[in-house]
Length: 253
Image (cartoon, rainbow, N blue to C red):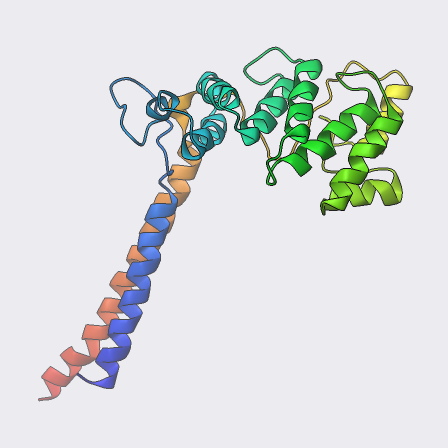
């Protein structure tokens, strides 16, 4: 095999690998279509019926991203009952946002308190930060600055950067309201009587309430197929450039 052929083979391998990646990237790890007709191990409805586990609970996040709020709440409720602290964090966010359930800051704060008191090293620190924030703002609970500072210090001692930022500056931006205001600005708004806008915690953006069978969106599908078409054109063009010299050599012979 000639050097040119080796280079062409490597080039085609790269193109095919890239094409495969683009196709795979357009396919969600779990189907957003959670109907009885399509139920299998890739559907959300399938996982909502499984016994609570780390894997099962993670599908609550995907359900929420798909806009399947009812399914997300089923999963999170079962996981909370089984003691999974990450589900408490997510359910708290949904209560605070009023996503799929009536907005309820008291229930949101109680779940953050439970997370803060847990011995789960992955989520307890996060719970402490947000429970401290709720205490500081008086959101869903009576305002208690001394208690809030205790939780902020605990979170900071465990390495939470936002808790450290609060202790330095009196604010942090890991908890924002619907206007994107930091903790300090939220407190100022509450002092000024701006209580008409529900406060919300945004650790991870929550999906809009869209129909389940609209995911992935047509726009995303269009972009994926456009990339596929572009890569196919590149492959065809490269293949033509590969065989063109051979045709010239044949004519010369």
